[in-house]
Image (cartoon, rainbow, N blue to C red; front, top):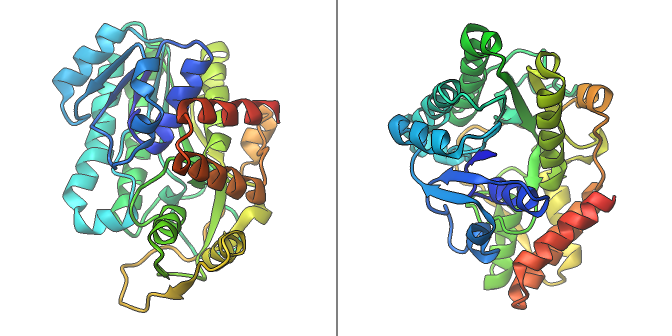
Amino acid sequence: MFLTGHTGFKGGWIALWLSHMGAKVHGYALTPPTKPSFFEETQLQSSLSSSTINDIRDLKNLCKAMQLASPSVVIHMAAQPLVRESYNSPVDTFFTNLIGTVNLLEAARNTDSVQAIVNITTDKCYENQEWVWPYRESDRLGGHDPYSSSKACAELASAAYRKSFLAEAGVHLATVRAGNVIGGGDWAADRLIPDFLRALDAGETLRIRSPNAVRPWQHVLEPLSGYLLLAEELINQGAGYADGWNFGPEEGDAKPVSTIVEQLCVRFPGSRWQLDDAPQPHEAGLLKLDSAKAKSKLSWAPRWPLETALNKTIEWHQAWRSGESMTAFSTQQIEAYQAA
């Protein structure tokens, strides 16, 4: 297994899960993007077959690392993942998310062992119409902000590589789009729950930009389980699964930001928030995903409703604050999810 982005939040969780199942995981990523980080707090490097710290924009070294790993499956998670950061660094965002993806696909098609690729993009790759209906895989791609647009571009590049090179070589490529993932070990800036927990730990008032924005909230293990199921089917069944897939929560778990904050405040009496009324860059106001395809063809379905996802996230943070082994605690959460 060759995994890019293993030092990040989602990448760290799937690396730990794969290692727990006995997979040989070869990671390729930049240094952890935050301090602390899931990668360091779970001592993840000791669980991996190899960990290469390098940039996916470096095609020569990416090809070398993949060929040395000789994987059958490639999972591509490395990205610039933040909407607001994409306004600050649009060139880097496009370069990382588009050209980095092209580099990954180029490396894979020049590595004879590769049989399947799962490319993680985002629910924000759809052209947002601000309508009440969940987006389906066949809906039009787009993106107002540089992050969303760069991921839509990565979808198009993936389709081109699939049709031009990979399909005829017997390499099966799928792209996947998840909702707003939450879970323990996320310290990224400008994400709601990390921002809430930072404010809570510092005794400060949380400032919220868009309390009425609706997002499809889900625990990080939910889409990761879908990615693993899909990778298995790409190996076993092949071309019939090599296209785009949504892995989102049940529609009832698409909630406004204010609802999530209020639920967190109930769990932590004395915590507080206020509206940040400063001018803000554009972000989508309403976003939902239709996962009927994954439910029908993969027998995948969300297992943890929003309340459980919030509780598991808080439990992880509290365990970390109390000095528990986060390798063991994270593995226990993975096992609890598998049992569900």
